[in-house]
Image (cartoon, rainbow, N blue to C red; front, side, top):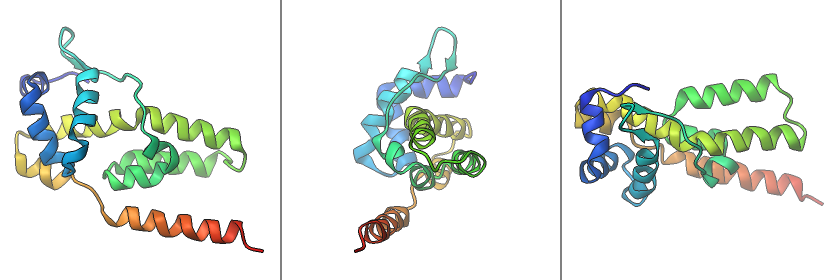
Length: 153
């Protein structure tokens, strides 16, 4: 993704990057993780924001829930479509999908952040960023129900 001057300015300044990420993520404890990822994706010589593999255990184990939690609806829908059209009953397809999502999750979140940055509005960062708190509760309930079902006697 080609960067505007504003995007490049924010991404090149570690302090400002962290301030903007805190507004966007609304989880201060995750700012450093995503700031490091953004710095890894930034190619200042080419003035581009490019994919490089990172890792997210959260995205590996709870793929759809991770994307929903981080408001990455397009990624969630694409993953859901892949799961619908590719039979994931076997272990290998499930691992491939989970691995792919875990490797690209931070890039997807950071790319959304960079696109919203171009609006040059902290209000838009806060409104379009953030998280869905109830997703964690939903995931925990579904996981509990799965274990009850899987280990019933």
